[in-house]
Length: 545
Image 1 (cartoon, rainbow, N blue to C red):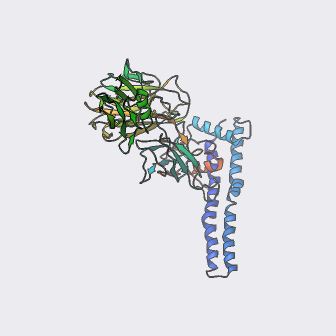
Image 2: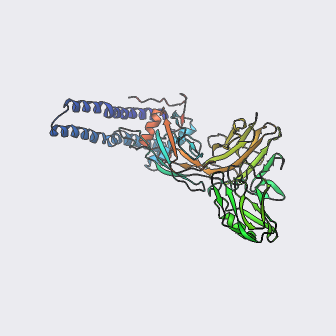
Image 3: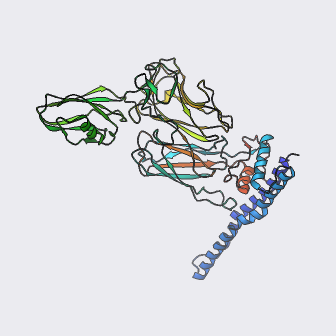
């Protein structure tokens, strides 16, 4: 035999109607009558009467607190027992486990394409007007299997940056509104969430793309424009696809200085730093140590040539974004110092020294891939940052997950393609902008998974697009059955007390579905009754006696 869904959900609707009626009475009718009685006592009374007024309200609150046990005994326990016995009668349950009975109900509803009316949550983050950081937070109201988390609670979740180290891995503390019990008279309230997100950069330890900053090439000589770890499927290397250059500067000592010292100065655009004094005949290691002691120049390298004291120090600004020209104070005797740039870095880099440059010829659909190792039925945020030298008149970028280098797009368990597009004509030519999307791995993973980034509609001729800071990270759930989120650092680092608000809404359209959550604790048990929207549900959304 099979479950009679109409019989069960009609019965459930009747019980829900009684629960709804009890709730309304306790919250409004009873409360209103009690408040009328309190007001009838009048004001300016003796201490004894004021105590009486307070006592009446305390008694009301005490009565309201009995609501969960009242509904549990008159509604939740009986309807749960009915479900268990119904599944047992169908010979599909060997135990008295309510969760096992629910899973069987859900399984059979999916098989029979039965559904309840859906509820729809949503959230669009807002950022504090005084924020310094230019990063973003990516939000998902779905689960790893692609289903909507319909029982997300409507509330404002407040986020504050509580730690902002210079490496960009800031901490965002999140606090939800006060919660209440599922069968309480004042449900729903907030989640009571208290959690912390750590901001991601391409250097984050959990970034699945190990060279998302494009700082290193596969081979500096043989393949200088193939990013290490990446596969280049379609490109004319060095023409339509390039890794931008790391800046190289020289400090040239000449005229045979015989004594004294010099000091090198470097500006990050805001502050100027100076090295310790360097002897007139300072060696390669001396100059390297002096420069690497400055903030943000820790990774520079120095190669020294020439004959003492007329040295040429060649400085490679590894990890430094578009560095300014070094200057110097010359306190040597008889010598001179000259500065030059032998290889200019790119002005189109978000972080580090390099980015990946797509130079359009108006036709080529340049394509790169990176192999990923994913967990099944999990949710991932893909974060990319883009900039154009000139805003193109045409062009689309597609980012997706594919199962092979030939490009078969992977769907999630809800048959939704793991793919999103970026309008190249909307990119900025003055700053990097965040272009991101959420993907979900299927329960059955293919043997290989690749992140693919490609020009899917040709970009206008003569335009260069710059890609930097690619991250693929698993998203964090803010609370059980709640929103999933991933925080990313932008071109300007987060600072303490930067604010993000997550205004969560939920239309709670499906009355039966919502009551099923309250009675069976679906959210906390990671269970979802099959639903449909727009009046397409198979079971009427009716609470009636």
